[in-house]
Amino acid sequence: MSSRSAGAPDLRDLALLRRVRDQIDREYARPLNVEALARGVNMSAGHLSRQFRSAYGESPYSYLMTRRIERAMALLRRGDLSVTDVCFAVGCSSLGTFSTRFAELVGVPPSTYRREAGRATAGMPPCVAKQVTRPIRNREAPAASRT
Image (tube, rainbow, N blue to C red; front, side, top):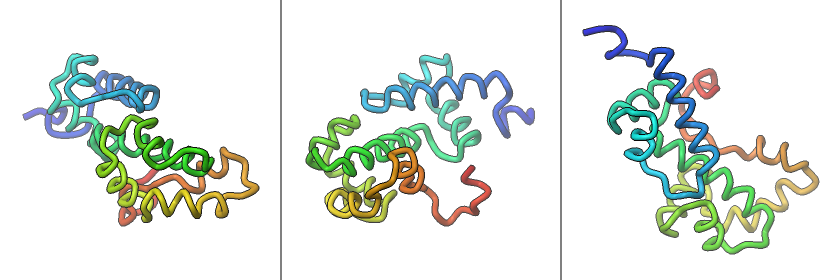
């Protein structure tokens, strides 16, 4: 068994994985699935998932949901959209799944976040508020592994 198949992605795969990550960053609000992402870089869904997790510490789906929740947090801080409107604006099709994932990542339900976030980030430039409120998927992981 080669070290490539058992371990970290090689340079070619890293370039492809970066393309997938960039696509998720750009198209987070569109319906995306691992199979379609994998086809776009000529990988199987299983190989993409394993390599993506090896390179970035989470699955493509988890990364997508984290991006969606980050955007949802920004929209909820604005305060002009309902939780349901935000859910659909960021590409989620189920309010229940959105609310569960949001609470897992942020620590409070989206309705509570919407109510309290405006006060917590009042006066902060949006770029600072985004950094300060960024969700961290694995809070137990050592800080060095989150970079």
